[in-house]
Length: 406
Image 1 (spheres, rainbow, N blue to C red):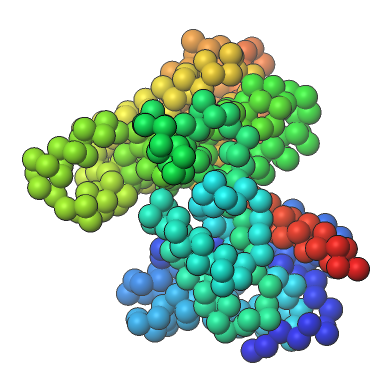
Image 2: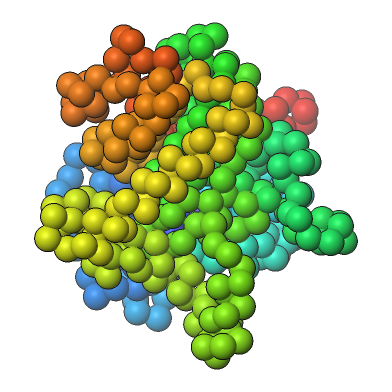
């Protein structure tokens, strides 16, 4: 398959790559700005597992077979073949990737070439669950379709507005000069919220807002005037809230103990921190609150894991509220935040001291506005849309560069 640039190119493909899945979304820009909803979307899941499936808009899941030696290559090729079948020859304007870490260098979307790709590999140790897979997809496409423009949008970019007092780690100053700092993540999700909240709530959204991105990874972002001023994730995606398999904030002495006293290797400790901690590690059952909630009555560890999960969210909301000097709006988003009414209820119950009060019926129905009329804090649920933000960035970048070349 080739991409003929003489054809009318109107579509932007967004890829969001994880270790075992690639999510994709296709946006048609023929009529102007990228629409909020993609014309086609889905995911290839089970990469590296025994069974793999293609999920896509309007179709039942389809079993696919990926080469065990090159599963990611095959998954990318399946997506590109489906794009070709949907669009015909040469109608793809660009592919844009969600790249988790841009370090201190990349605070805006960028077109990717071999040099940029090599540079981005330097950030892989800071996001080992995500960075390698986005870069692998980029590398595959660069090699196979060198004429196809590719762009990266960075999860760290949104937090470039955070002041230095929040960015710095309390290490020797030379660490700051070497680039060791709190970067923050989930930036595309938070950026989408700034658009959606401003549209729906106007000036209220420009006040003191805390957004809770609660998924398998989780973080909070404190915003003022729709800009990030503080966030719970830091130098790596391990920091902050307790997550599905990650511990969140942890006494570094515990890591030293595991290595010095229990004699675990760096690789073993890294595996524990990224894959065996959080809800999964405490419960011994699952990283997913949906699976833990039905078991908590009979399994004390499942209940303890959920209690710790909620406690960390509440504690960090309290800390960020103090940074903001109060709280006007609390926003829930991402998988748990959007769909788990029980977790939202428990978090908000423990925030009653702030004047937070949910409407039980609205929360049970996962309505957009969750708070009661008497609540001092507006509590809302807003589904995130990282893919649209990436498509919008790519369209703007390509348009501005086309104008510059006239």
